[in-house]
Length: 69
Image (cartoon, rainbow, N blue to C red; front, side, top):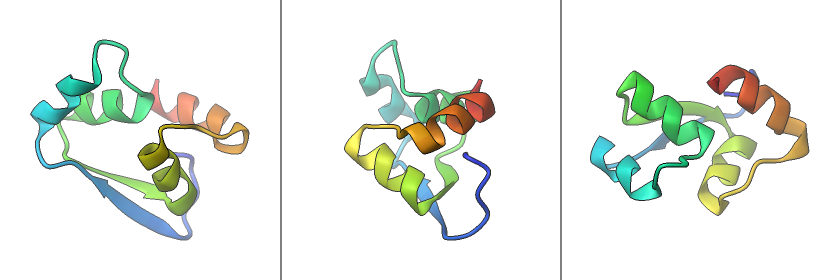
């Protein structure tokens, strides 16, 4: 997601239908997964933690949006 190639992890959801629970204004990571119709997403460890706590950081924020849009 952010372009980092070290310390990568895979974020996984159980079903694509679970993305609908996030509402119309989905986070960028969820919108990307929905568009690609993928249940997994390769991310760095920092981005993965951010997904799970519901935040983006200033460091990864600009890369995150650029890669997702």
